Image 1: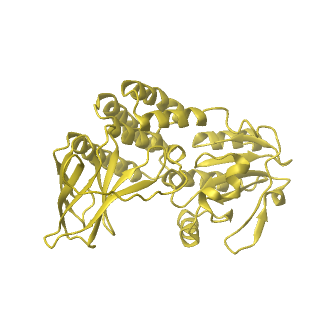
Image 2: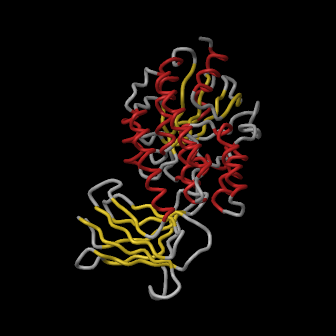
Image 3: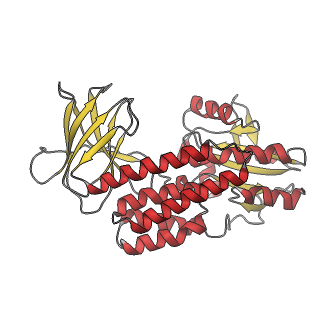
Length: 359
């Protein structure tokens, strides 16, 4: 739900590892069946962002084997063995040498040797994905059943995080927890993890970003005029916020690449369909960069209200105007153009709209 908020970043930084692969280095080697590309990459997640840095790359050998390396780090991080058009292998650097066996045509079709944390992470991902698949199979109309399944997932993740001895794996599990749990409910577990693994950069950054997010939403805008902006819609026509004066407007900040945004979209669609005849509308503001992906997502998620974007992603004009630190995020504006609420998710959105528009 919130993890994209906490993992927002500014740019992908590409670094190239230098030196040989022998000696005091973190080494990942393995063999890939059915590899679709001759190039394999070792990448690392930049904590506090959705970005990765490329540490090393190599051409696959004739027998589909490879060896990649980077300078060792004392802090546990999340690493990826990446091949074009193939699922990533996710690793943790809890040891200096990890051996990987993988199949490029199968999601989660890999195993690791020499890294207990990587094995634990793979088990977590397998069990978590199975539970999410069950939840996604429940019709949206079955609200109670869907909510019960989400609670099961939250309990599973909470128990795992509490017991796990690996800070990087806890970071990954917490990122998943924020997709189904309310941020305030998940904070005690995050705080406990940050305390248990004191000094871990990822957990410390996640906690700091969460605490910022949990402050009064849009405190700098509350009961003040919403900052004006004009952005092009999908046809290139400029749409101004002020053109909706006289209506309640939900400014919905999202992007096609934002997983939690896409998960929240059905809730936004439901609110639009329920209240659109009560002097209410939505203005979607995308932080996309690729126009085709933006439009495709609009159609896929059935976002049939005004959609605008300057296609500048993190350099969009709205970032500074609304002091956005991540998405999904929204701001509710009254007919006079003043901000009356912000960051309305799940039931909070419908509850606030019921309050101002009636049931």
